[in-house]
Length: 232
Image 1 (tube, rainbow, N blue to C red):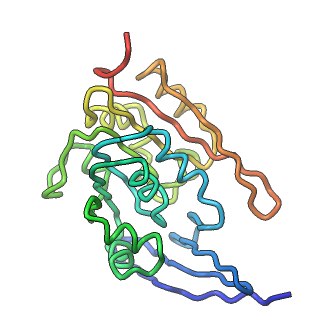
Image 2 (image 1 turned 90 degrees about the vertical axis):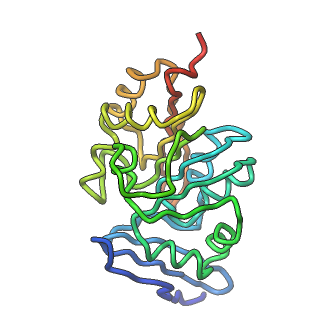
Image 3 (image 1 turned 135 degrees about the vertical axis):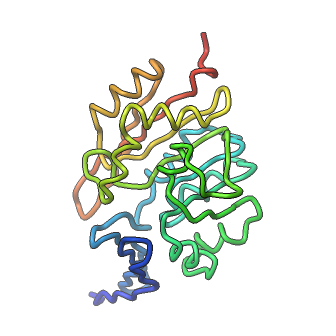
């Protein structure tokens, strides 16, 4: 039986919240994990739902806005699907710096791919059409939102606006005709689902089952299309 060791790869209290990148190692196995404001955000043990978020945009997703860098699995999958450009907007400058420093293999892959462009900023301001993010503008062919745990268990209370009906409508307005919005949630949300269907009757909800420490968790991926791009 192997003892577990925990190494802090990076830690920051800048930009208004605490973020830590840690590596847990037991024997020859290691898992990277992200902790935000003392709350577990994600790890590399089973990034199936983060990958599913990217897959929700389909093959050849074009130019994509990725809101929330995380551990990079969504962005890496989008590149594998043939994305031509990724604009990754991240609230924590430290996380962007850690990617550029190659603190994990996945983050290093993103930082060295010419299709990836990191932007330090708040996606709520961007989608609300507020200025202050030079070089970052739409419309995009796809948007992936994974900036929090979802509307029912927020790490950052100000993110609630993104999951509201006006916030969802704003996000859809930044898409090209036929563009898709994909949102990650730590679990099903009836209110979010009803709001999306109100905006797009063909909106979808996909549950992604992941086993964590002998406990099944059903994450949810929601998608909707811009009004101009829906089939008649």
